[in-house]
Length: 487
Image 1 (spheres, rainbow, N blue to C red):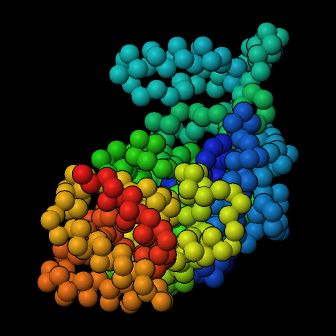
Image 2: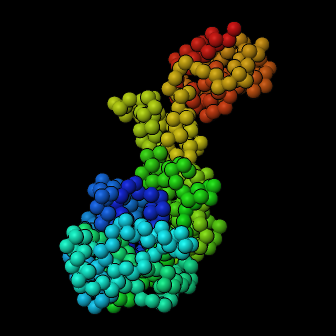
Image 3: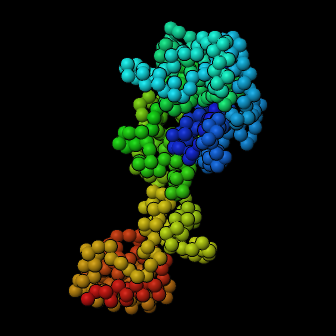
């Protein structure tokens, strides 16, 4: 086997880039970077009906966004091109002809109806359905007859009988399968397109892949692939099957658990470094209590021997906590840029937003930044910034403004605010503090009513900074309109 570690990520471009695929890509990338090896991106597009160029581009863009670049493969080329399966059909054909010539594969003329009837009969007998070898030893006359009927054969691999297929998995240790439970399987469809289990063996071998790290759902494919490696006289790579990702209800992660694709998280305003950090912890346990890792730190600490066999639970609260950590590191301007598409979609700001408007908004964003788990949540906080018509969040908030001291508090605050020569957070705080002394009231009797009158809420960002941002005119306008509602 090659001395240099070579891994691959080989997605099928048939839909959105699932979070599980991103984790597989990450684990492969980490192994390559830690071992000074190569990462190959190969596109497995032999599902002609479902594969799309749009999906392929989505996957590549998501990988780049996550920082998972590749050394060889589609777009960048390399010594083992082409890296797209539909461009490698002639290569597969050569191997198929070799298997047919030495009797390790044979044409199968069974129709879909015949195969389904066989499957149902086996299920009725309580047996595991697998192909029973009807075409395994067809006479030439029978082949000619079926061909004359217009039947287009598939090509099946002749599985050896009574053989234990044993391999050492990098995650699950020793794994064993009985060849008698596999049945002769199709390697080339009737249209000449190779199936996954066949093409992947030829590709991995010809691209000198040393480690195949993939999802647990591929574990059952491994014995078929090992048999093909052996039949073709190819060296078998190391295999490692990482666990499934489950929702918090411990069922397989699906749309009912929320966002499942990388693009969805990107659009919600999650940061790539946070998502990578979170995905690394899905099934891998660091050798410490550390939970926040940069890419460089992940490369340094990652190892397959700390990847768990048990399923990983996708904990959205954990992802939000990690993402909030990374959001706090950004400038308010950067958070504003992340939040803008969501604020525009919600109708708070139009497409032609000016730089001055963005800078003013960034000042407010600085007040709420520490309360955000992801950028889309800004929509839940900005109403108090954009709307001067104050709505009370509940009856308790409205009741705050019915206290007997409210008229004195509000009149004093309005006069003192209007008289400020320079408006800043410290000056506003000084005004509020002076009112508490003059009227001999506790802070709650002053600060809370002013906050409710300006925002409609009993809690929120720093009051002095908020008033400074919206300015005297808007603050006084809000006070007047809100107090007019109190009868």
